[in-house]
Amino acid sequence: MVDMRRDASASRSALLDVLTRRPAARRPMWFMRQAGRYLPEYRAVREKAGSFLDLCYNPELAAEVTVQPLRRYDLDAAILFADILVVPHAMGLSLKFEEGEGPVLQTVRSLDELAALKPVAQSHEVKQVCRTVALTRSQLGPDKALIGFCGAPWTVASYMIAGGSSDRVVAKIAAYQRQDWFCALIDRLVAESVDYLCAQADAGAQAVQIFDSWAGDLVGTELDDFVLKPIGAIIAGVRRRHPDLPVIVFARGIGAHQSRAAALPGANAIGIETEFDPSLLPADVVVQGNLDPVALLAGEKVVQKEVERICASLDRRRHIFNLGHGIRLGTEPAVVGAVVDAVRRFDG
Image (cartoon, rainbow, N blue to C red):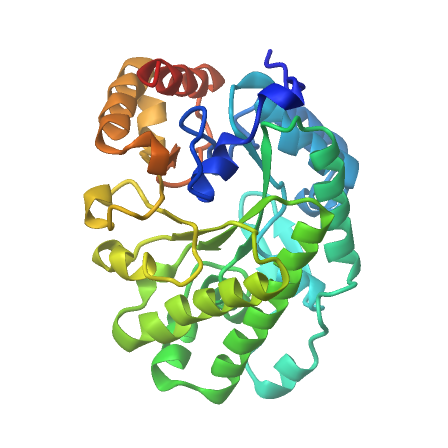
């Protein structure tokens, strides 16, 4: 078990140091979906909570599952346990999670439906998430950073348009045609996401990550207008209220366009997926990633080799070790521990 309460005078967050380009004591490390169903202690809390949404909006239980991975592993950060659909839910759309099927979300496909949505600030949903942030922060030592997050406008809009499914056809058509209601929805999500991230920062989040799970759907000017520019607008909006808050961007699937994401003004780090060659990013960009989550299913010998390859390719002063996507269901907790041990061994 990891002692999370170290002497504050002798420890500082390696994650925050790398994000702000200060000398760090070690290569920082955390994992996307590090709190989840692969952990038996998570499953026990999930059963106690009832539904997935009940867990998300129960600050005591959500804080517990946020902290659980740091009790098992020598990680440098906790990632807030919540969901990217908190924002549309807080805006007034009905939301439920069907077991084995994923989210079912009320749709928005017109200016009138968009106008009926409420702001997220002061909503019950955001207040509960912020209570989780504050409670989690109180349980972490000074060397453990707390990361908040939101979904990027394109990905969240895709779910809002499709009703929660991963079918983005209608959303892509609306993007190609620059339909008025779609452009207004993207703008609205920028504003609400800024409020949501700033509320998390006010509650104690020390860094935030913007997830764009479907960024690779768009190319050309659509990529610029509905992925990169909205993310840049969120960063700028957060910067106006929290100038020193580090922001990580993870835009999945944009492949060769990843170097364009690196130019986002204000982004402190760029998360890269497994397939991306980090050498394509400028040498002054902080890189987060990019161990294949499937490698964890292949066992300890495989992940040890992959850890060595990744760590050897990136200067630890500009690297946050992570996965190329989230930990998969069925991953053995012991293999996650082997990854952590291998990273620590590599850096001595």
